Amino acid sequence: MAEHTRSSIVVEAAPAEVMEVIADFARYPEWTGEVKEAEVLSTDDRGRAEQVRLLLDAGAIRDEHTLAYDWVGPHEVRWSLVKSQMLRTLDGVYSLKDLDGGRTEVTYQLTVDVKIPMLGMIKRKAEKVIIDRALDGLKKRVESGGRS
Image (cartoon, rainbow, N blue to C red; front, side, top):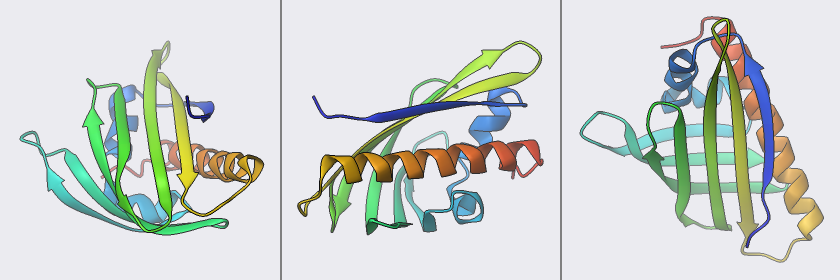
């Protein structure tokens, strides 16, 4: 089983508001930090992204890749790598838990594996940086009213 990194944060907004920001790929470069470009390549019958091309710059990991998304109900989205130049694996999930008072606990889990030799410690560090910046950016984006 591949190793993964997981972290959570509480956002002062309802799950639907958080998911609206997560699903707005065109605006990822404004808040994620590592995503420099995002382009939705295909959508499902509900208009949700099925495949997205991303240009990622996370220090040790720089790559252009395509991810496939699976929307698991209103509180979870999963993704997996379709193609990449540098990555062998990029699997992740955002899980939302509705808390009292209009708050949401957001858990982000990520598994990264690169095609070039890299120490596991460096891969986990890159995962941690990606997760921490994404969760912090997501929280700030949602709480500032930055939804589409």
